Amino acid sequence: MSEYGKALKLGLLGGTFNPPHLGHLRLAEEVACEHGLDRVIFIPSFSPPHKHTGAIATSAHRMEMTRRACLGNPLFEVSEFEIELKGPSYTVNTLQAFATNSNADIFFILRTDSLREIHTWKDYEKLFSLAHFIVVTRPGIQFQDAWSEVPHTLRAEFRIKGDHFVHATSTTLVPSKVVGLNISSTQIRALLRQGRSIRYLVTDPVWSYIVENHLYGS
Image 1 (cartoon, one colour):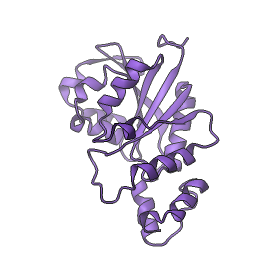
Image 2 (spheres, helix red, strand yellow):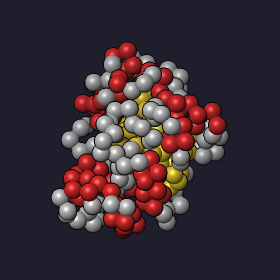
Image 3 (cartoon, rainbow, N blue to C red):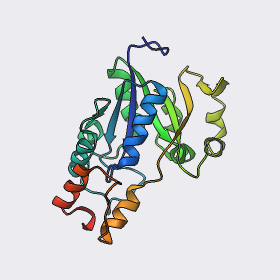
Image 4 (tube, helix red, strand yellow):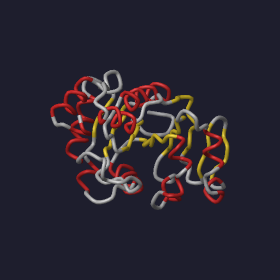
């Protein structure tokens, strides 16, 4: 039984994963170890609302790359939840489904750049009542800077307790000590378009899949 009241602590890591890279994997590994998560579930989006679709590989390709990226790590799972829903992938719908159907404490893993833009997410006020949040630092964006850009009405729903924040509904928001690697999918796609190597940025199975399927101009 965890301190949060349920048997398992389940981390959710959503994203486009276009492609999934070592930054995603190392982030999930470090967060699981630092915060005692029993599993981290990668959830590729079907259609990310905030991104243009032109440079995005199909959901089938991104799903398969994410599966291959997670091979061999018993902490990691991959979910087709958002892909099977089709349509725009809204985090509020994903959290609602996992909160309803999972007998676990749910921890949504968020980076500081996303926290800074949380007001642009669908029903963002509702998100923090559905799950606990772990906020990891994206290089160049500190937690306090991102937190200061969160709408005041939302910040007012939290109180400080030790090193974390407690929402009015008793969920928590935890500023993590974990700092993500400075690797981006945008950088990887640019290297591929230039015909340059992406070795040591993605796993070998993902690299092979990209080459075999001629993704991103490879």
